[in-house]
Length: 185
Image (cartoon, rainbow, N blue to C red; front, side, top):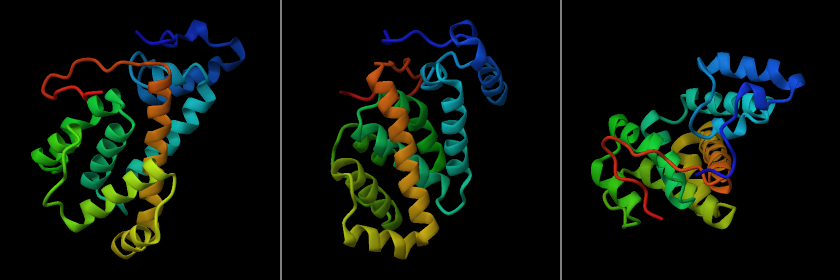
């Protein structure tokens, strides 16, 4: 059980209800599950974080496949079951190989990655583990993805780390997935 109840419109201070209503309308419904069911207790922050997430996800400098691979890397590195729940099947559908998804989940070595996949995973892991990226990794990412692609990659990691920090701090558990095993601790 989460450390905070999912947000409801009544739980939001009256002066913030317009922002809450706008946020809910932009998503098509009130946030009942997932990170925004917590973050929307501060609706203006939720709006801004969602705008950033949406901007990054629409960015064409990094393929959908690589974005999903990076999100799985964030989920595993930060042990965030909800991000795993939300993206493991999507990663497979976007073309991430089954063995790669399974090996990330189980913390096994990743073998046979395409060069762009390896570079993206290396950058994401270094950033999360070391809070910085070494020159070799940065230069490889820049050569492969260009300046815009590296910026997309770094900010994708950062955005999903913010989501993971919130879910982990508030102990938001992921529901059972119909086809994907849960992320082990």
